[in-house]
Amino acid sequence: MYYSKSPIYFLFFFISIANLLAQKPINVIFFIGDGTGLPQISAGNYVNDNHTAFEDFQYIGLSKTHSYDNLVTDSAASGTAMSSGMKTHNRVIGLDENKNPIPNILELCQSNGYKTALIATSTILHATPASFFAKVSSRYKYEEIAFQLTKSEVDYFMGGGKKYFTSRKDNRNLLLEDNTRTYVSSIGEFEKSSAEKIGYFTANDDPKTILEGRNPSLSKMLLATLEKVALQDSPFFIMVEGSQIDWGGHDNDIDYVLSEFKDFNESIQAALDFAKKNKNTLIVVTGDHETGGLAISGGEMENNKIKTVFSTTGHTAIMIPVFSYGPHSEEFKGIYDNTQIFHKFKKSLAFD
Ligand SMILES: [Zn+2]
Image (cartoon, rainbow, N blue to C red; front, side):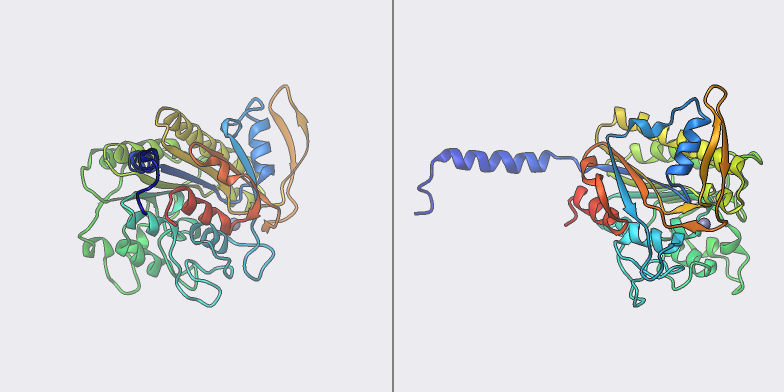
């Protein structure tokens, strides 16, 4: 007696199917502040009239950043944990603890029709961005990582490191070999290009610091990328890294940290402004670990002054906040391992 139930059930069934079909896939902008924990965010807040873009987020979580076998992670293991959902050894990218390759969220996005983009203020081959396309036993194999990037399905990327494509030990020029992508060297060329896949090199090696006058800003790079992806019908996943906050921490140079944090904070504000208009966008902001063991030991509220002390030139194991805004942002509240960030993205994008 299959059809004995009231027709109302069939109506409900069809309505829920129609709702599912009508649900547009969500866009993601994922921010990673390298070496950015609560001390860096607090310092950035106090020198900026007691305000950051972080205050606009709806949910806050904390992530445990230790790597597979080290209490203090590096950016490779932490990047892999967030991009691919597994704890691995420090210095390893895109491979599990037994060196088996593991799929990352960007690849899952690509096979689900997403446009994908990576933006960094380091080279684009540095550990954090590389965790979204590379599988290598050492983060320092930059030429191999460059090769893997040319073979990846990443649609848009922006960052330094051109020399690893053009001045290589094997004498190959990967830019000439890659006929899938257009390569440009200015933001203007990026904006003008109508190519489907574009690589924009911001520097031959590491990009300059903000204090040295790095240009364009992270927010300008993000807005140019948003403009490209917004033109298309596909949903998108963009990873934005404030790479050099970490380098300021390693140098125990608070002005370096704060200037890079300001650039990062402004790009987050730009994303929030976009997401408030485009309600289908999930924004998640976190760090991969804290750098410098930074403490704020004094200062003056009235004139945006802080007194700071660093306790190490390396990374620390303190838990790192995760801020989320937009559809499924509630998934990111609570205390969890950094590997859960991958699983939370997967669940939010309904890739299970
Ligand atoms: Zn570091």
